[in-house]
Length: 146
Image (cartoon, helix red, strand yellow):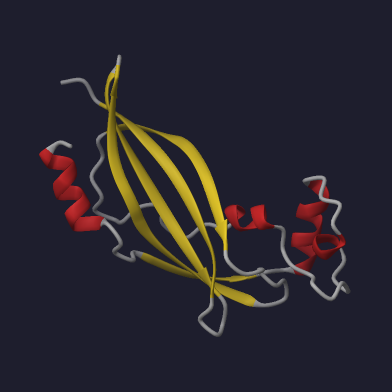
């Protein structure tokens, strides 16, 4: 890995740079589930004893910032995918807290040159501090040619 990426990793990895509160609205989560084609009643019926937001709903939540204020630019950026990891159900009708940090930074080299991948993670917690889920957003920056 190049020295400049190692320096960025050393400065930014696992450093919280944003915190945001979200109210999980039951009307929104049920409509989201319906539009996604969900059929399980626990995602569609607020009266269900195990009512919860569908796991992919968490990926629709975002913090105020995607990257730290002074994070360097390596080139033109593009979306490189999302991933969700659920530990406990997200319960509509209750607030949750999302804390953002850079989870990983790595490079790949292709025909067009070096590409820098950044994985920004939001960790979601309930009011009791229980870790509910992680949502990773990957971006790729194709390095500007010199």
